[in-house]
Length: 155
Image 1 (cartoon, helix red, strand yellow):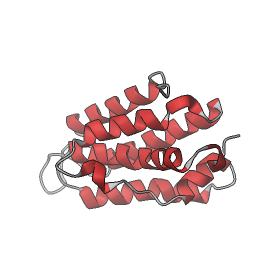
Image 2: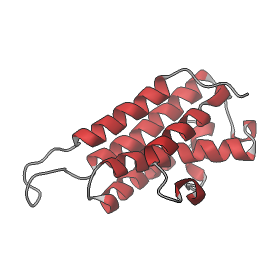
Image 3: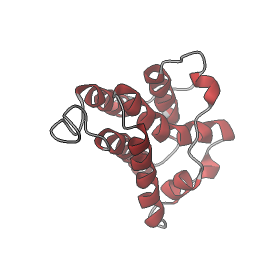
């Protein structure tokens, strides 16, 4: 079992940022719907809070206020690069049990997927269009690729 106590403050901050940055990566990939996408991401957190008690690690994660260090995004920082880097760091060393790491990955993907599906792309006044745009799908595929890659090791 993994707990928040297994991480130092900087590591925990990185773990907490991961799902939010993944969602922001998807939001930045598409046009419009930012409010809907943000609300959809919040719903994933709310649902995880409703199931508290099933996982100490996920309970601690969703109890920590999701935030992103604004300094990372200053100067027009590339959200794709920042999110990819931070997700890789969040998986560093896999301090958690294999089950907790997989649960974290599923949660990150759920947040990103919710953002992608929150707003139809294209169409006219809500008719037609695609649930997930090609750009959003590319972002989702990149996120999944990062999460499935081997974790980096700390220097």
